Length: 259
Image 1 (cartoon, rainbow, N blue to C red):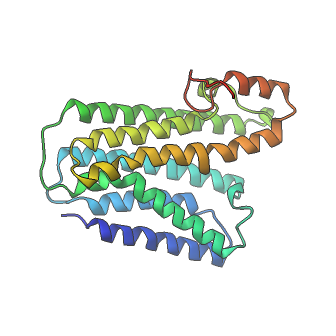
Image 2 (image 1 turned 90 degrees about the vertical axis):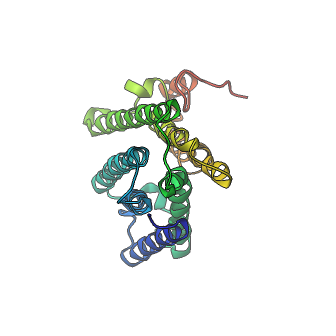
């Protein structure tokens, strides 16, 4: 049997604390996103029963591994290329604020992983059902959507002709944040695929995963920050204002009217 949830929580926050200590000592946040991704992989691995893991557990865990490896490598490459993460500009020299940020990352990892951690704790198995396949297909869609969106934006930024311009092509034509839409789909998918294996309190806490990811992206660390940055750069650009008006902020083809 894999490690119990209590031990996994301890490992999660111990990793974040170590990451914070390194941030304070070397005054850098370059390892922040990579540490988060590696924590996803480690906790998922430690939660599994290596000798008797089921096909469902193996597929679910592999989805997490692929997502975390891809995102971690992408974000680490990006910060090495850019040199810094602008989210840390106001806290890089503030140990207390840094600690809070690292602990929030620990909470993000834990809550997001809950359905998979609960699933990997199971010592009983059931035949695969339509629910499993629907969840994994949604995860695959989200994973591919997020990967394409990230690649398109990186290629756009790497083109010197696009300096001081905003991307409105590819998937970015249909959503101002298609990468985040893909991420939401991925975690909703992994909740769905595990949902029929959850019982009691696991159902309540498990559903917090996609809800938490959606709220975090929509109202806290994702979209609001990027929208403010974009407005600072392009507020006086009529083309950008037209793009904002016609393009949904998150979900393609679903543009809510402004109140």
